[in-house]
Every structure is written in structure tokens, then in C-alpha cells.
Image 1 (cartoon, rainbow, N blue to C red):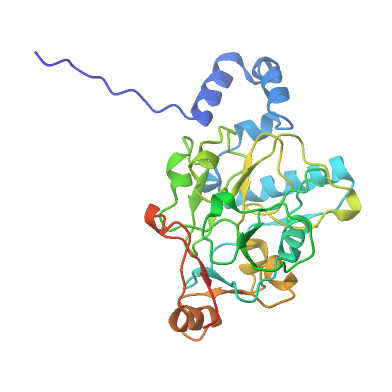
Image 2 (image 1 turned 180 degrees about the horizontal axis):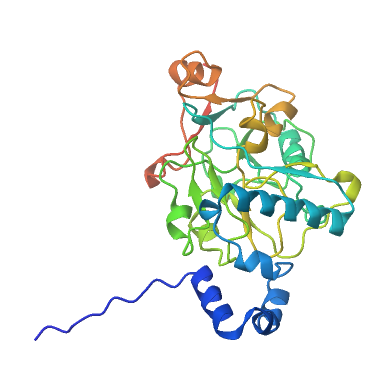
Length: 307
């Protein structure tokens, strides 16, 4: 006789915590998990019990945004505005970089660091600029920590950040669905739902995800107050984060901070669905390529050289 199998319910962070809270009572539950909240950093009981981003009603989302704004005021003494701009219908964002023009100056890295409220001590950024010997495609042997004057002789430079894949392995690896791809092509993270397992970081073949090993520290006068819930709001310790195409800017008609900072004009960004856009012209008229094509991740981030 065949063995009978029973279906077990999928246990998520929310259902586990909700069940424990109901069993213990909210007061006792808060005391019982206090060692956990200390272990994972600055997450509060409100953070742990918060619904997944996709489950929040408009009223609930408004209260969450207000709570984070108040938290920034309490923690840093800074007035911030946290918005939640939605994807624009008929828009899919795509990026391209002209490697004939990029000279490795790193201004994009600096702009990302400041725009996205990264930890100052670690000099964190979502962008790495790789220096490679001219003619080489060995990314594993590239140097991302060079300090000499640029451009160096017989070298070329390859900026790498999240490729916003159409087939993102990071999304498939997340056990709690804390990361997903939005309609405008941006892969996002709900920092309040991330459990810090780092499976997504391991799954990403582009080394594009960052883990907060410690509580990010930013001098109050350096905090960027223009923030987005799914983008550059100050993240807690113990979560993974990544490039989000500056969605708090781009979904409002502005350009990514890295592009605005590029002094050579190497970066091109826009809506691939717009036949009159510059990015569409590049893709139709240049011999573009993307990284690690053999993996089937289908990046929305392209590179090209001038003919």
C-alpha cells in the first residue's frame, strides 16, 4: 500500500509570530522575544508583527510610513519624508552603460552611497566598479578596490550593480517572499519582512546584494530626507538590501542618482517601452551585451562599446 502523505501548512514568519502572540498574550509575547529582537538588531515588536508589504491596506501603509518617519526623528533627530511611489503603467525601466566612455572615476559609487543612506563607516554602496585588463572578460579576477589615478593604461572599467533580472534567482531563493519583481522591472525588498537568511545574496550571480552586519550609522546632517519605503529609507541591522533604480526618484520622473553624478555621460536610463526614449535607441543601434548570459537570468542591465 502506498504511504499516505499529509499536507503540512507553510509556516511563514508572520504566521509563526501571530500564533505565538495569540498563545502568550501580546505583553508576554513581547517579553519572550526580546532576546530575539536584540539578536537581530533594531527590529521592534511592531516591525516583527507588521504585515507583508503586499498585504497592507492604504490606511495601514500610511500608519507604517508615519511610524518610520517618527522613528527617524527619535533616533536621529531628523525630519524625513517616506513615500511609497507605485510603478508607472506602461513603463519598464532599463539601464545601459557605455564602457568606451566610463573611466572608472567612481562618482556613481559615491552618489549611490549618499542618496541611499548607506552606512558611513563601511562606505557601503550598491555599485562596484571593476577594473579589468583591456580585452579581458574575467570578472572574478577584476579589481574593485583600486586607488590609483584613472583611467589607467590598458585598462577598462565595468560598473556592476543589480541587473534587475527578468528571471531573478534571488527572488526564487527567498523563503519568505520578502523580495519580488515589480511591474516596472525593479526587483525590490520589503526590509520589514526580510529575515536576514542571505539566501538571496548567495543566489545572486552578480554579487549585487548587501547585508547589514551592524546597525547603519549616518550623521544626521548627511541623512537624505527624501525616502521611499521600498528604496532608501534607513534599513535596520540584519537585513539584505540592493539597488532599486532609485525608485523614489525614477517613479517621479527623475533620473537615478548614479546617472546624474556620472561626469562622462556613460550611463543611459529610461523606459524600454517608449520607442522615442534614449535607452530604446541604444538597444536598437548598439551591439549591447549583458553579463553571464549563460545563466538565463535575463538582465535588464546592458553594456556596450562605441563602434
